View 1 (cartoon, one colour):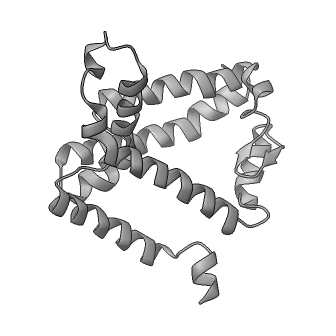
View 2 (cartoon, one colour):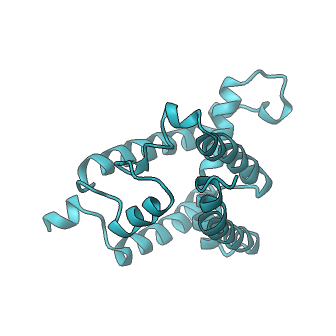
Length: 188
């Protein structure tokens, strides 16, 4: 029982819990779940009011999402502190990264890329700045993020969410097998 409380939950427990939680929240509270909407609420609270897209009462409309986002951050922090083993990245993944020239893995991320120093390199800039812009643009263009479409949208059987999730997976495979080797291999 101690392993179940301190270690990662098996897929056959965590998956159904996630799958059942979202439709219940949607059916009883009438709310869709996704993190990109929370980002819009944060921008609405901090951006100038002359941008029409952010002109709404973020506190009355998005307070529950902000609470959810804070809970996600606290939960992620606690999970990282209580369940992470000494080397959370598998040996196979480390070998794949080493083949691409990434040998310094600190915790969950390659510190050669995801540091302030890594940001000054071409691969770091492309992956952090350009990749971040593309994620933000794609989220807006797809009318939602991966969690919103994959968890919330699929659980209520939205065809647009299925199309978006298929696109996310295709983009992830393309990025992993084509773009990442190209960027890290110096061919970019």
